[in-house]
Amino acid sequence: MSAPRLEFRLDRIGHNARALVDRLSLVDVSVCGVTKATLGSPEVARELLASGVGSLGESRIENVERLRRAGVTSEIMLVRSPMVSQVDRVVAGADLSLNSELAVIERLSESARSQRTSHGVVLMVELGDLREGIMPADVPDTVRKVLRLPGIVLRGIGANLSCQNGVIPDPRSMAELSDLATSVETVFGVGLDVVTGGNSANLPWVLEPGAHIGRINHLRLGESILLGREPIQRTVIEGLHADAVSVVGEVIESKAKPSRPWGERGQTAFGHVVDDHPGVTGGQRVIVALGRQDLDTDGIVAPDGYVVLGASSDHLVLFCHAEAPQVGTEIRFGVDYSALMRAAASPFVGRRYLR
Ligand SMILES: *Cc1c(COP(=O)(O)O)cnc(C)c1O
Image (tube, rainbow, N blue to C red; front, side, top):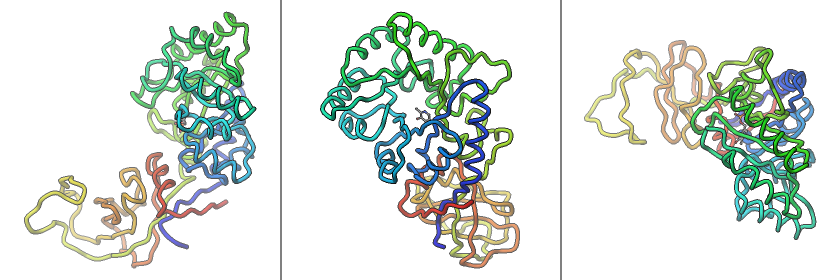
């Protein structure tokens, strides 16, 4: 088996998805399974669909196209605003997209007409995190214009919090989104089938007993399904697996070395001045063939007995408390969302799917 590689425990990913789908179905919220951190893996997508997610979410059209080529026919939502330069591919590959610019929706309309099809639009509303979304006061005017565009179906409205500024979805912001949905329906006499409240950061709010869910009927979940954690405090969600995905690297050097560098010192390979890890004295140093070209090395968790001392483009240097491994030994690391998505996008990192 070649290294480095990502290992996906599909049974655990499926368990996480099923647990979230079941809990959210009690409050009539459907789950869109977001596969972007897996680079649009068809294996993971099929597991999510088999575990009850209603649709898939992807941020990149390339990943949508990968899923389609692999025969995935479920509804796919593009969760980043389409680029104008990609509207034809978006209309061809995705059923609907999250949008915050009328100019983009107009281009989607032209493309849908020329492809003799229609495209679903969910209008994103800015609720305070200051990433994507139209200001709430501009919703009526935008809706009026969108409803006039041929080939465009206004499927709903939505919001995204917790990404740019860590603003936590709470009863106030979710009630604001609910009220907007109801007022759009009343003013324009249309039905909105999707009111998408946000991402994994919405779980603490939605799972709070007695939460007033209002009109929210859809969440887009990636991290919570793949890594079992909510992203506000990064605590493991009760009953979910936090170890469904790991990365495996291979030891290429293992030696006893002095604990302090010697010689005059300047910058390191990546311009950082390293501290000397004062807690680390003597013992064994281990190099794993894993580096910044493979993943975000700041987002990995070493197994018990190891401390990560640093990483350059191709070398991960560890301190080993226990018996030193021989070269050729494989070491398994936990990953956070950043490490996972960059490993998934690296051409150097293989994959293995396990049950
Ligand atoms: C990535 C993303 C999601 C999924 O977020 P998680 O924190 O992984 O659940 C949902 N919506 C949008 C707009 C995203 O970009």
